[in-house]
Amino acid sequence: MTYLATFHTHFGAMRFLKQCLKESISAKMMPVPRELSASCGVCVRLESVCAPSVPEHEDMERCYIMTSNGAYVPLGG
Amino acid sequence: MKQKIGVAIAGLIVGLVAVCLGVFGNPANMALCIACFIRDTAGALGLHQAEAVQYIRPEIIGIVLGAFIIGLLKKDHAPKGGSSPFTRFVLGICVMVGALIFLGCPLRMVLRMAGGDLNAVIGLVGFIGGILTGIVFLNRGFSLKRSYEQPASEGAGLPVVNLLLLVLVIAAPAFVLFSGSGPGSLHAPLLLSLAGGLIVGGAAQRSRLCFIGGVRDAVLFKDFHMLMPFAVILVTVLIGNLITGKFAVGFADQPIAHTEWIWNILGLYLVGFGSVLLGGCPLRQLVLAGSGNSDSGVTVWGFFVGAAICHNFGLASSGAGVTPNGRIAFAICAALVFLIAVFNTKKLSQKQGVSP
Image 1 (cartoon, each protein chain N blue to C red):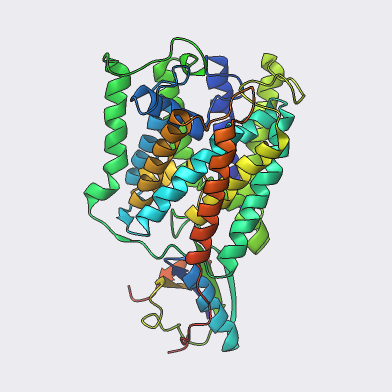
Image 2 (cartoon, rainbow over the protein chains, first blue to last red):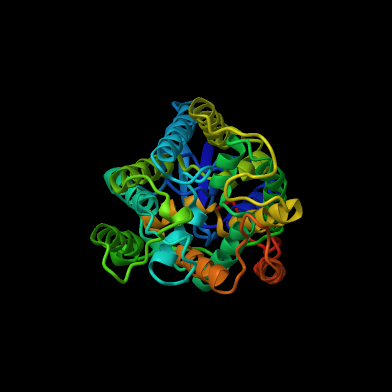
């Protein structure tokens, strides 16, 4: 599955990306898509069999699952 | 593709507004400048006494209110703040000092380039250098910490202040100072300036137009689409200047500019470096403040105080060049920005897991 995690800070996104790569999860950092935020922050797009654990990342703002038609559905409602 | 077209249209809108405001009376190569217009507004409120640069610029009011209105309409308005406000205030002052050494914000840099001012092309080197320096710190773990949800009153702060400024510029009471000569006396009709600002604010809010973000995304992610508005504004205003006969290539005798190339580079270096740490260029700070971000609101107050300091203490450059005080101020501000970058950079190696 493809997930997209947004963060409160650039630092949080970088730390998350580093940890993804350390755990051999395919991930990359990119600008937050406009449809998700009016801010100009960064997000991490990752391929994973299960959703990333949100509570462990204090800087994570929200996590979305990317559907086959390119839409972003927020995890946890 | 939709996003690329959106930012290109935003660039076109900003370019057309700039051409229009220039034709209807704004100073040459200064139809839209966030730093200069905040400086003029600060002067009109008596924060400094430089008589040539005092006018409450409706463009600034329009940009904040345009972003505010479009944010409410599109449900993008999100009051938040609390991310190192004092540090942002200081960075705002430093960015303004850099801008007034160069004589313009990044937006005016583009307008000056489009007018044939080669000093601005030289300044671009410093601007990019400053952004790259900031990116080095971002990559090493720089952060001003996260922001938090705030009450609606926090998010409405700067828009309300700008409504009051609108009342003042319309009523023009005796205590508001308006230049009788100089750049402050040159302005388009009030309603046109206000409309231009509203349009730019709305377009910039929807497109996230930012002169810092464009270079940042290009360097960090090889994503070049946010550079498009930069190019579109340049071309649009260039064509406008050619049509209206305002294009003159050269270094000397450019409107409201000096030829001290090293200070053009250093001034914009400070703007680029400080703006990366702030997370956006001066235009973006106004738009974010209009969209409810009180940290950006504090930054805008930093711009106001920085402008007042520049003119009260003789730091601002003029057509004659950079002042001795301006050179000292640059050294102090560059050191401050560097120290802020160093002391807010932490290691990325803190252990945490990803998988549940």
